[in-house]
Length: 235
Image (cartoon, rainbow, N blue to C red; front, side):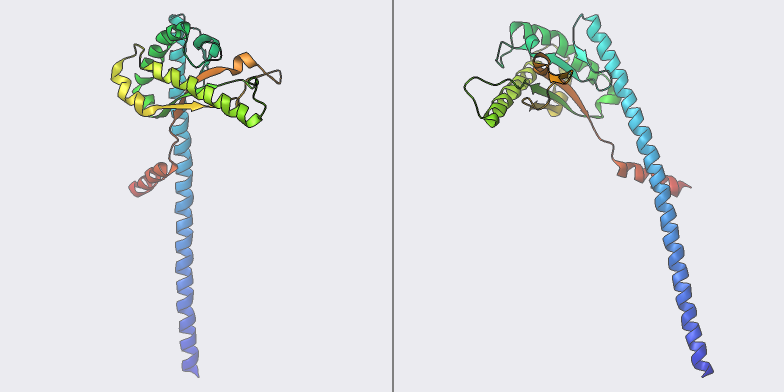
């Protein structure tokens, strides 16, 4: 009987050792995970802020360069997005660039492309340069179906964006950036899905526009986690 008791106690003791070891392992994994998480979030935030700082500095330089060239352009100092009125670019109700529009792009595009692509610290973070066409929501004569109205404007907005993108390569920007520009350039038509509102109402003149936008690469948190693991290994 005493032998049976001893065997049982020994088995229970082994189980306790197993669960103690497993608990320590889980606790250790939890501590490692929390440490990596903090490192990842800290690194992610720092990289995001540095990326945004670089973009704002380039945006500032772009605005200054446009002013020096006496080019009127609405540039967002935070994002670098440029809004150009359709009246500056196109014939009435057309996607064909007017002589005035071509002359405007002849001045604007070289400054835009050369400023952005000359900044190695930023250009490596750019995923796309997006040319977006936008219309207003005024109805086309003879079209009553709202879906047809939307798609008619979609076609016009896309054709206008494509006209601007096509003409970019006819301007006098530094052609050493041409191949990279081709890989980044994206054309979009937005129809009247993003109107410009003034006092809660659509401003038709401002809604009809072309926008040039930079899409910056999103930071990959897994890369930061890898750095976190390497940091812990070094410790």
